Picture 1: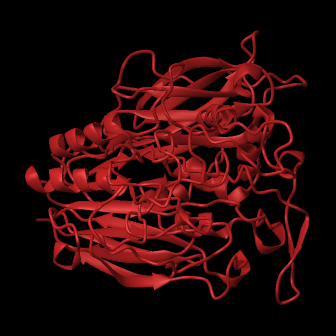
Picture 2: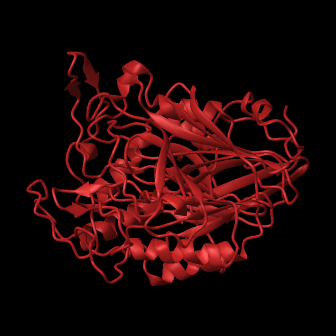
Length: 516
């Protein structure tokens, strides 16, 4: 039996059994599952998310109505927390916010649902480490783009192998930097690849068409959790989740009305995005009003947030979708929105307040990569104009200038979105806009989707492409192996090592960054 709560190596904990049910130390046990037919099962594994020094969010989904119960174990300490009821209103998902945790500890949380008679159903265990309050080694992985372009779960090839590769690095947490699903990408059972090989997808009714109803959006999230690699990783590795466009539809902005003929029931993006957001928030292990019963600085209707990971690291998750102005060529002389004024002010204020050695900003769109939306318009903030900032670039210019003005050091940007991996160094000596300090942006993805790239770069902020790895042909099958994730490790002295890796976990490129 593993004694949790001690400062144990994560590899030791994982050997107990990823996502499995284990005996959990001494202390009061949950009631035994009723030996009756119709017990409440866990349909989609278990998850944790937004784990900080003293808090975490746990998640599970029930096979029928039930109340989520968590048995929290750390060392000799055990407590049972009863959470909300899972009903059809939340697609039988439920979360429990765990507060008052000890910093720098290993936790095991046994999750199950109980019925109205107090009978406990299937039990599974999630594990995580809270961040330490003193300098300590920490690591994380990030990527984006899961089950896109019609490439889904191919069980003949072992499923979503990129998740297994990330899991094997034993990270302390995982940032999914957007496109957690592809609601606009139908899947078919068989796809003939250019070389004649046949890609065989696991297919459900909900992924067979573009998502328009709430049920169809929920079904997309459920689909990803059918993969055993995903479930195993999520049981062991806390998630910090973001959203981008494909949680709703490609390249969307508020107020858009779709012309895509595949949408036969609903073409208002605002309506679709409301359904998409509800499904996303139900399925992601992030705080919401039902999980957190008091204010913890996180607004349940707001996706952007800060996750504190101890004295070495703060993570700032952006939302570059909810407040975005429509896609145009991006050449407006006046400032247009990609973050919105409130989020810009929040980001500057919170990064300025941060006392962490490293401030990692996870953006769901890249800064310097040109991301076209058709022949003229631009999806991201870059506009192909190498001159002074225009349009949406003006918001990022304000952020970068504020960081310099306030003397903020050790800021690193990470992203996914473009379906290839790259390392970009931004320097005012190469830029049309010069009021900022040099910084790095690291790009990693896709993890289970078609591979593309490389894209054109916009010179406004002076990026240099130091490294990139991309597809040989557009929309390359995951079978080719060009699926990517990033890995970051901070040692006790603050040295940050960033590596870009492929679907096998092999390191393609690495960089050591000394803290200023």
